[in-house]
Length: 380
Ligand SMILES: C[S@@+](CC[C@H](N)C(=O)[O-])C[C@H]1O[C@@H](n2cnc3c(N)ncnc32)[C@H](O)[C@@H]1O
Image 1 (cartoon, rainbow, N blue to C red):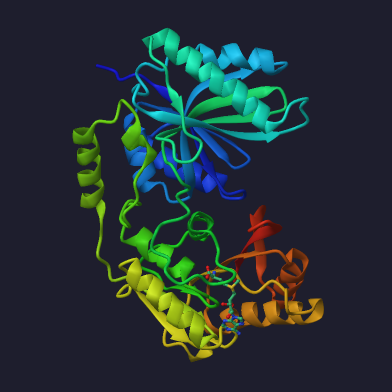
Image 2 (image 1 turned 45 degrees about the vertical axis):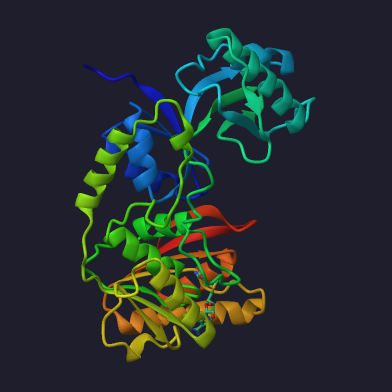
């Protein structure tokens, strides 16, 4: 029997959409469509379990229920009301509406949430005869409405809180990178897990820890996460158990040649704590040292993924010099290497790469926290 197909919207970080698209098409053998921060695909409901447990660049997985154009708030109401809620949510469950709005509208996000919330209550009542309750603080189920100009995409959040919060980070570095962005950068580097992988400025260790979890294929529920799909009516514990067992069977112990360097004793200690908490302390070697002097290493770094300082404290000329020394140091330590870096100082990094004679093979726009930045891929 062919299972019913649904449309999913997987949300990710800007700049790594195609890396998530490759994860999805590789895992589910489906066609994908990408947009900024988003990847769409069609699958049966088993993708809810397997996607949330295994897609490393994904922040959230939304099961889309409606996608439609509308002119005003009154037109939004019937679009949301006509959804069949009976198979999705039990009457004892509470819900909330999360609105993400882009474009200019004659209504606020709050007004849209209120209209959509009423449409859910009325739609649920007409398909089940029961009344659903709202809980704005800690609902069982969260519906998402992404409003962009005159289009609304309405669905249910199957993930819960963003997956970039893995749950292992006990030491918080002041400039840590999001785990999901880190995974996108690692994929972009095309690292093969048998080759030496290095973050020469690893801070709290996010990038090498994510590389280790990726190589070991550790499922994303490993750190005690509860998923929002546990509260959805179609949740089938037996099926979920089978997917978990399948993913457990894919896991691998290594060893893998993964290294992190930082010049700060405090940050290296924090990175070791984080790696221990993530269960990969034996998989990553953390070295207290200078990432601008890689000659001293007893291995040849081949895949370098790094989120270097971006100039809050360094002035522009010294930042250019710093980046040049970093790229040149890789060049001296390795006959052939790929560097993937994320920085908000794009021009300084590109000038440094030119001066070091490294080839810029890709450049993408992203955000580092709230700040616009770039992902740059170099070959040496
Ligand atoms: C933006 S932070 C990296 C954050 C990290 N990706 C994380 O998620 O925690 C940059 C790091 O570069 C380190 N750093 C600066 N100069 C360095 C050098 N010469 N060698 C090694 N690390 C350096 C800083 O100590 C800082 O931890």
